[in-house]
Amino acid sequence: MRLGIIGKPQSGKTTIFNAASGAQESVGDFSQAVHRHVVKVPDARVDKLAEIVKPKKITYAEIEFLDAPGFSGEGKKSSGLEIHPDLRKQDAFMLVVDAFSPTANPESDIRAVIDEMILLDQAMVESNIERKERKAQLSGDKSEMREMEILKRCLHWLEQEKPLIELGLHEDESKLIRGYMFLTEKPLLIVLNIPEGDLGKSSQLAARHQTLVSPGKREVAVVCGKIEMELVSLDPSERQAFLTDLGITEPAMDMVIHKAYSLLGLISFLTVGEPEARAWPIKRGTSAAHAAGTIHSDIERGFIRAEVIKFADYAQLQTAAAIKAAGKMRLEGKEYIVEDGDVMLFRFNV
Image (tube, rainbow, N blue to C red; front, side, top):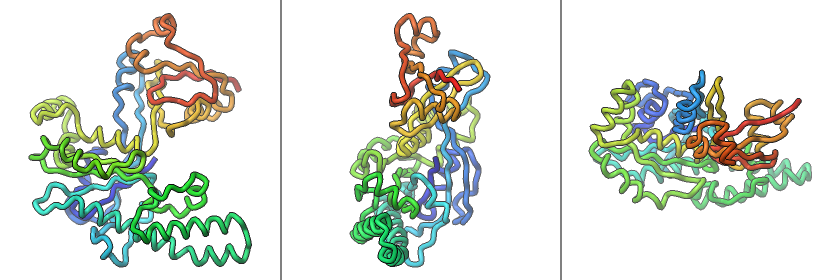
């Protein structure tokens, strides 16, 4: 899954990119460079499984981050807007907002960037709707006609300065227009980038912006990008001492990555054995058979059953014998909906 980092120039988005990825890209220079990095999703459950089993390998779930230029922050006043084409290919966005400078106005900046996204989507609809209408009328194709009607609804919604994710399209309707890759149809994680002096106010700042939150559509996080970038550059032993000095228990960037993962609609099931302890990313609502397919298509094709243990039970009991004796291992069929943190072993035959 892919997450695009966006924001006004000088908002600290490349700093946040570096903090999340451990990269050392140049910051604060109005660079037009595009940065990509695969970011591991921290998972204490995988760490615990590894502690118990001592596997040869540990593998975390991953998200691909993209840091690309493309928003002026001028909002509705913007003209001639252009963005990097790969931004439209992202599954969700992280909007980094300046909350650290003396003249910072986070609410205004958030609205400005969302307005620009709306304008870009509106231009996309307008450039396609006339052609689509002509094609639908000539062909009489019902699918073409339906797509045209959905585009008209989208245009009307965008003209009201509302993002498409709030339009409430049904899944089959969204599927028809997926190829347009509308920016405002995707979930948005708003990251308020604060100064070090405001670290103690993080909770209050997050609470102040809770009106922006819409489950599954929009989330808010508060971090000090500068501190987080420093943290990621330290050795693990130095990092803990640095966190203690700041009065912090864990890097805020871990929380940001987890929020991004959830906003992408992802959960993890876990597998563990001598070769590897691993978190496997799947979409929320995935069946056991389809989850098996993320490991290998043969496992899905020959699926017999899944042995499922809740992570909390595995962490407490720790051995197969103890887990079975306590009745904490259950058998599930192919239609079972996998839950976050399920420790699974698939039985199959091909």
